[in-house]
Each structure stands twice: as C-alpha cells, then as structure tokens.
Amino acid sequence: MRVLAIDYGDARSGVAISDASGTLTGETLVIRASGPRAAESKLAELIEEKRPDRVVIGNPLNMDGTAGARSERSRELRDVLAERTGVRCDLWDERRTTVDAHRILSEAGFHGAKRKNTVDAVAASLILEGYLAAMKNGRV
Image (cartoon, rainbow, N blue to C red; front, side, top):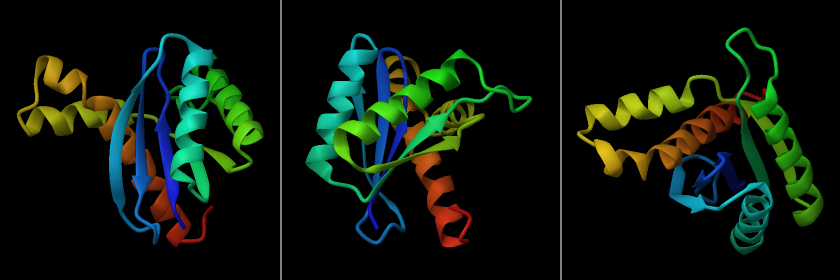
C-alpha cells in the first residue's frame, strides 16, 4: 500500500511518499504555493500523478490535544483532497514533528536557507513514518 503524507503549510507543504510496500519513505519533496486554494490544487495534482492508496495529513493539534485554527485548515484540506481525488485521506497527530525535523537537520549540519528548504519534507517524512508504524500495528 502506497501512502502519501503531507505537512501542510501556508507557503510550503512537505510531502513524503512511501515505497509501494508501504514500508519506507521513498520520495520527499516540497510544494510551494501562495494561499490555500493554490496549495489544494497543487497537492490534488500530485496525488493524481503519484496515485497513492491513501493520503495522511499532519494535524497540528495544540500541546494539550485541542484543535486550533491550523488543525481546522488541515481538516478542510483533508475534505477537499478526498473529494477531488477520491483517495482516502486521514489526519495524523503531528505535534512536535517540525521541531524534531529542525533538530534532525541541525544535527546533520543543515542551517539557514538549506534547512528552510528541507524542513517541511523532513516533517512530512516523520508524519509518514508514524502513520506507517501505526498501520503495521493495526492502529489505522
């Protein structure tokens, strides 16, 4: 089962796509868009091109587990992409993924613009890894 994960952002969205077996992250990229409608269109086109069996979108819950404005945008994206592509779209708790992505890149020596251009893809990979592990354990 091939899964596509999205770390949705205002200007950039990180994307990670699993291998065909749904075991590993096979490809990462960053989609740049100005505004939610442009992002929705670009992400829908990517889903139609890559044809994953499932899409998982990071759900940026507050640290206390409540949903805020960013979480609502992720829910809206899920609904739009599911309707436009016909692919099952799930939300995944992404608390701390961007913080962890920054730490990983810093430890690897990525700084400044180099890190800014990569952090969203790394965050999407972390979302994908968590989701794939949950699938393997029957939690999704």
